Image (cartoon, rainbow, N blue to C red; front, top):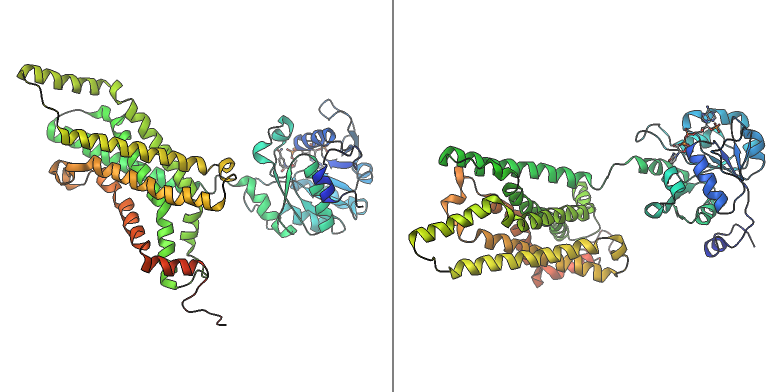
Length: 461
Ligand code: NAP
């Protein structure tokens, strides 16, 4: 039986004490960290270095030789050297012939070179079998043992056997190899560590833009307007009052934006009468970042909760409450409880609490540790059904908050609507169209289309 068989290694990665020697070219940070981990996993390690002097930094039990001698001792050689130094390998072509070379290198910029580093290495040494691996693991994580978040190791290469050998090592180190195919995938793998929150970029920029817009909108209507027309300085609103207006507005709009692309997708599918045509790029990208939009919305909703809870501690709040009491005392009359207002404020708070509870539930189920433990139907139930319910509660919370002020002229300073009125546009539109989409006469053809039915099939039977 082949002792490198992936199944054997997968089932018993640490049971065999006898492992093949692995050679590492380069005694830099990564070479040392990987060598250390390999020795711990039972691999004899030999370093190929420009200097054969043993230093304290080199893992104990590792041998340090010149490149040629080290390469002769192993079938797998890990090239822990920056790409710009690969030229020194050309004179070693003969000794490296037939060996598996593992390219672990990264670049400083996305698409820095016309070809990937691994393909470049394969061009320099056509007689060797190049495999790309380990570049997404950091030397620090290897050394400190904090690999939990990055257990996945992307592996690609043209030689299947060579790739298997490398994947076996990956498993033996307690990591999970992910086969990405041929060496053509190397460019993509090399770009991974250079990406900066790719899925978060659009949601973050959108949130920043909208937050800035609503913040200055509120500053104009609440502070500047009050100063000009009422000659009152309420600039301290900037600290809590305005953020506590902007946060719920952002939470509601972003939550609606999580469901809006699904509405667009349904309309496009109904219009085209097929699901077999790609959505436009902008819609594809939007759909892919719905989770991020939802999590940012949850962050805004949580801030709104905290800002609301601290309201009674504010000097402005106690001053206003005191003013009300004194005015009643001066007039020697107690204001009767306004039951309509009591109902409105209690319903508004109850809807907010329920909306926030569902919001948190959505956030929790989007965590990989939770979503991995629910099946597809359960996940859809929470994210779609309960998600819409959260949107309904949060929209109702805002509608009840606006309540009787919607038609009051004070809600339209400078003829501009208050921001809670603006915040209702997208969620109300989403809910109205969703309501239409669940009518049987619309839902039935849509379900059929999603099951593969086509109005005008391209390939008729
Ligand atoms: P490094 O600390 O700079 O070490 C590179 C090693 O390359 C040196 O220690 C040296 O080893 C050798 N070297 C330098 N110049 C050379 C030359 N002209 N000719 C031959 N060998 C030369 O770099 P590193 O951080 O270990 O990174 C090594 C590779 O791993 C890079 O391609 C990097 O992109 C990749 N990587 C690093 C990390 C990380 O966390 N550091 C993570 C993923 C991937 P000798 O003195 O022994 O010859």
